Image (cartoon, rainbow, N blue to C red):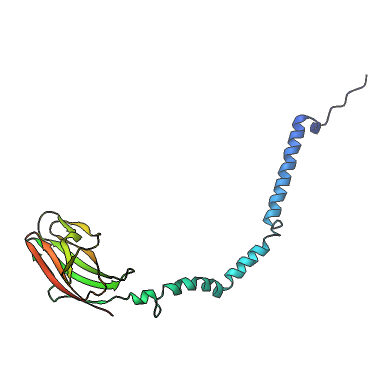
Length: 201
């Protein structure tokens, strides 16, 4: 009776699976090695060259950014230059107080706005000499121009704690021909006034 020869180990199913896994591992390792050596980057030099040429010419890249910077710079006759700040003359006395409330005019600026009118901005400091919180808001102020009373644009609405101070801005939109204005500061016991003079640059 003939003796049966045993099958080779790779002819069995586990052997085939092991061999396939070994082949896949070898191919994967080979591909990774070739990728690290740059053998698959044959199509990239053109893109990298273009990138290098873009970064290698500072004048070109800087020139692309310069138009924006130039546009923000005021040029003779430009819109920004025409809206240069005007001068605002303030009175010698700039502090006004009634009871525990005190207002001080710190600064004033004026310039034509986009609608052709004048935007007058006053920076004021409110000091609360009392014990309780105090409203510091634009409703306290009015501006008289040519017999007409103007209210400020909305925006200022703060609380000033007792025995403390806080600063804020009050903006008025006035006719383009405004030159003299009277600021009225309203207190619970009356009001104070301050004469302002606006002159073009």
